[in-house]
Image 1: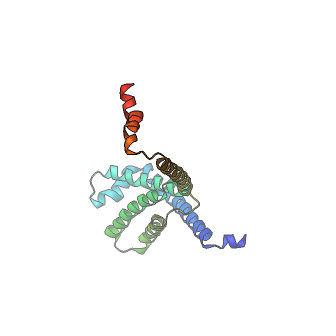
Image 2 (image 1 turned 60 degrees about the vertical axis):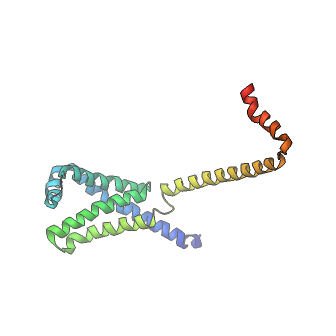
Image 3 (image 1 turned 90 degrees about the vertical axis):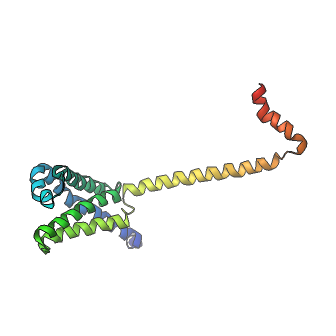
Amino acid sequence: MLSTILTKSFSRDTALLILRVFTGTVLIHHGYEKLANIENFADAFVRPLHLPFPIFFSYIAAFSEIGGSWLLIIGLATRFGALAIVGTISVAIYHALVTSGFNIFLLELLLLYFASASSIVLTGPGNFSIDEVIIRILKSEESEAIETLSKSAVSSKVNQGKQKYTKGSLFKFLQENILSDISG
């Protein structure tokens, strides 16, 4: 039992689970706050960057934080969710640098979110995720399909070896397989 808990794989997967769930849980409220007052968010954060369509980009930021957080928490399309968070947090880091300079008090939380989401993008969700379950199902179906194909390929090669035709039987082969469909 203790050896199972102390293995690298179990420790790594547990650490990724903790990182995913806590990052998603703590970050999700930022997206809901944006949706609660989207105009205020657009005025305070998007318009100062002189981006076009500030309301549209505000909704994109809110939904990427909410959707990305939920994807992290449940472990489904985890890298995609983490990548959405990385994009939104990158813009937030840029906003903080442009408006306040290198203010560590503003940047520290953003940098932690960025580091967490980047780590998940680079390492994946780990074994304790829905992504892993889907991958295992697909791999088992793939291996079954490969096994079935290899068996049928071997069987067809054996049958081809048994059905070698001589020059005299070429017409007979054509008549049985091709000409019979035309004449009948």
